[in-house]
Length: 149
Image (tube, rainbow, N blue to C red; front, side, top):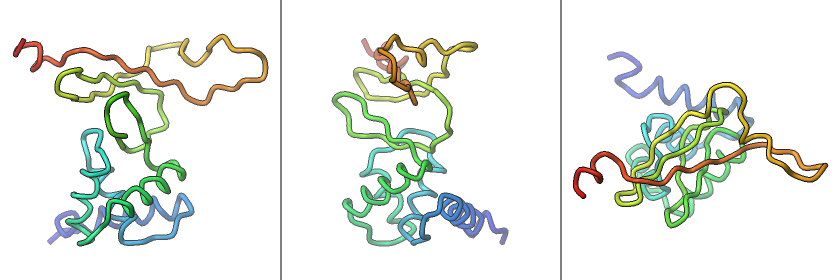
């Protein structure tokens, strides 16, 4: 059996990420890092908890939120909030991507930022303000919901 099939490689990567961020390594943190890292989408806390429990066994929703908060503060996870939806979590890539949210089914897709200068990062604000991040959300209908209309 190779490390990838035993889960040793994802665990080792999770340990390295946690240590690299200066966080104490716990089973719950490792499980959540692995779940978010392996995800192709934007997970809510309930989904993170459900998947992490497959690794750790029992994990409360409060513990899941605590771990997600610590990982977000450490810069390993990005938390994005969309109006009318629970917070969503994804691996922090330290890029400036945006999101498309389907108004009907709630599907969320990444949208790359405009190529070249990022005008959204240069808002017209009074002197003294410093922009660290810009979040743009596109709302509409995904292809599946359009076809069902």
